[in-house]
Length: 117
Image (cartoon, helix red, strand yellow):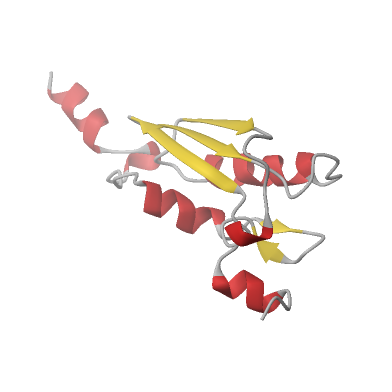
C-alpha cells in the first residue's frame, strides 16, 4: 500500500509530480513555432482546446489554412513538447478545421509581430 501511494505522488524519475493545468500546457506549447510565420502556435490562436484527464492530455488545434504544409511538423512539435514533460503519460493531438482559423484569433503580440498593427 505504501509503495502505491509513493508512485501516485512521484512522477517519472522519482520526482514529485506537478499539477497539470490548461495554463501550464499552453505555456509549454509556446515553444512550438509555426515555421512559416515564426510565431508560436498559442499566440497564433491555433490551439482550440486542452483537455486534461489525470496525466493524459488532449490538445485540439487547427492550422491557418487547410492546405498548410506544416501541419505534420506542428502536430509533431506539440506531441514532442508534451511528451517531454515527465508528468504527462499520454498525449493526443486532434487536428480540426471547424471553426476555421482567422487572424482575429491571434494574440496582440502575434498581430504586432506579423504587422497587423
